[in-house]
Amino acid sequence: MKKFLIIALTFTSLLITGCGSKPVEEEKSIAVTVQAAKNQGIENANIFSGTTKVKDKVSVTTEMSGVIEEMYVNLGDKVTAGQPLLRLKGTDTENSIKSAEAALNSAKAAYEDSNITVENAQNQLDSSLNNAKIAYDKAQAGYEEVQRQFSNTEQLYQAGAISENDYKQAKANLDQTKLGVDQAKAAVDAAQKAYDTGVSSRQQAKAAIEQAQVTYDNALSAKNKLVLVSPVDGIITSKTYNVDEMATPSQPAFTISSLNTLQVDISVTQADIDKFKADQKVNVIIDGETVEGTVRYVPEITDAKSSLYVVEVLIDNSNGEFNAGMSAEVEVITEQENNALTIPKKAVFDEEGQSFVYVVGDDNRAVKTEIVKGIETDSEVEVTSGVNADDTIVIGGLSLIKDNSKLFPVEKKED
Image 1 (cartoon, rainbow, N blue to C red):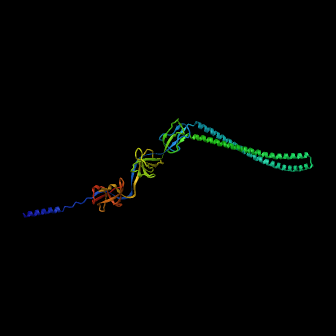
Image 2: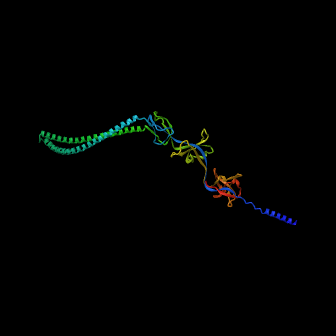
Image 3: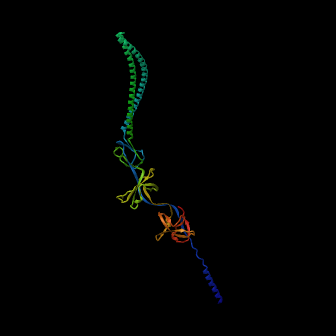
């Protein structure tokens, strides 16, 4: 009996000892996704939808009336500056050009002939002047001698020393000598007149060339006017005539819309209209590509049909990348910070009107931290207070943890 008691006590002691030595369960780490807070640009923007359309339109008319012989373009075609659009019939014009060209060639030939005439007249004048000078000098010398002799004869005649017949003979000799001088001068005058006549003929021939050239140029100009060309790059948005119809300068043949500058009209509510200013730069997204746009016009009154403000935005399309009628989105930046401390928006949770994040502490424990938010986008939040750059923030698995939870941080891979 005593032995049984000892065994029972020993068994009880073992049970008590076994129960008292059971190990305490170790706290498990909770796997969470983390990312460091970082400084970067952040902005908020509003998006407005619209459609591209042409801004500038040009009416193109023929310079003369005529029946259309050929039509080179159709409605909707793209054209470049200088490209032919249509051609008028011009049989009479072709005949006028041939006639004017013949007249011009004839006038040029007459001018060449007049040059030869003037050259011959000049040569004749030179020869005549030389001969006349010799004859004139000889005649003048003889005349002076005869005049001296006649003066003596006249004195003798008045004194009654010679007869009247001798006096008359001396006077006749003087007159004959004077006639020789006059003839020499007349020869010079004749040569000069021939030269002047040649010069006048040449001037008339030159004037005839100029007039013929004007007539020819006018005929060519009329021919050029038969072909109507585009003054600008653009697209044919209206076409008035067809082949064999009469075109007139009073009726535009085409309307060409320039694609160099496109316009996007967006409808804006009263709440958003103050976000727009004239000449403001905006982003325009067309076919997945973002280009810069400029606000052209901000209305002060709403559209009568939609009761919205229709804002006009222009984009440079000089490279011809876009067409009219394409869907476009205008992005207006409403908030922007170039160097903000940001964290993913999914890291933030709210409690009782306050915002919090979990910061990973040095011992890998969650530290519930209150923050003050700044700019918010769909994916990022600016933090103005509460965390520092490079703090490790829990961004995934928030529902599994609480303040002071032991964490197993898994860093988010960059996209």
